[in-house]
Length: 468
Image (cartoon, rainbow, N blue to C red; front, side, top):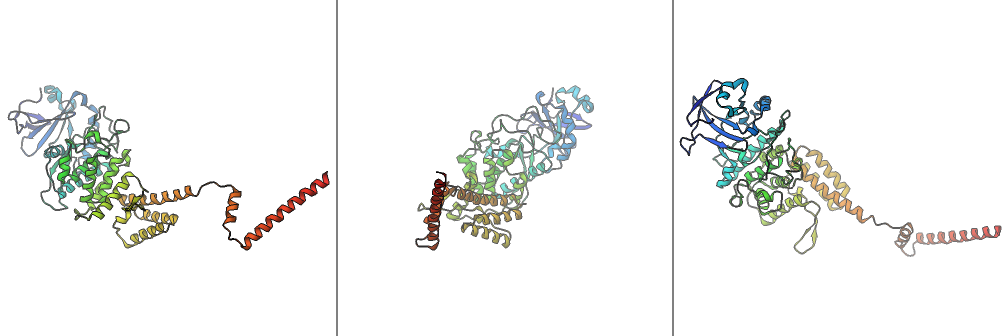
């Protein structure tokens, strides 16, 4: 029966391996239990590297996994997917070993990943700097973005399946980090068969519609990945660490609800990385469909270009940007009351944006000027021209669309207010009332009306006289 004692040796495809001893329990094989099975650490005979042997429970042994090995090997070239460089033990190549240990049938052997899981960091409330958080989140975003580009999704993305292998020790903003994803057996990719048993139950990374509208596919991880990125980015805050629920920052029962943890995370993201990053997390949290969440390419671009932690802002500017994010969450076109109770016009998110060129800034000012003059169709046209210029920048494009929606809403409201129905005679009388007394046009109109009535009376009298 596997495993034998720690220190025992056995051969896998002409390679000698030794079962590693657990660092805390001498004499016990080093194994880690997971949802699908147990992973044992193996030491190569030359001590140059360690391997992982994953033995699956009978329910998760998949003979068809052999057919996807070539695609897994291709994915192993993606930074953060080292465990895809695997082999599957099968009767054709490993009969002698399987005769001795039948439970190894369709087990996987792959590189052993050293490091901390995100679960370890959460439960230990391990402190990280803003620079470390940004580097780790960027590494994860890059891995997930490249997976999406290759048409792949991890599926079982959670804190326990994300490992930090190299956390930068310096405070350099651009110091790279290394992360790895593990437990990739449920992965989606073209040509893969959908697993019989997908992850079930509630956790702090599943949207509320998981059981109804959460199909196995390319967008499966956009919500869970977005939540993971937000947790990592905000983890430098002692307040965030203090409010962490457990194996995830959020309590599974509060997913996609307006709650204290969501408000805190949103505020910290805005303070440390800006309104665009916090707005992207708001899009994730409020998404009713997975494809409405930001793509991982969007996350990677924004985290690559985000500036170092900003200096503390004045209360006024801080609250103004917070209001902008709240508008993106709750809807657009709402009015903001001033302190004296007088309603003010809605704040345009683009006012806070630093434009890369003077020409684009001039186009924005022109659109805002037209909007202020109530020339709404012209303002909508100018915003539309900005859309063409920002077609390749999803974050700015989204803000332009918000501004356009405000203008369109104002246009629609004006149509509604002007659509009160009136009869033709009432309209005629109204137009008469608007003509100044004594006007020559009013007199001509009255004379014409009197003459017309007289002619009708004469014609009627002539008709009666001739026929009767």
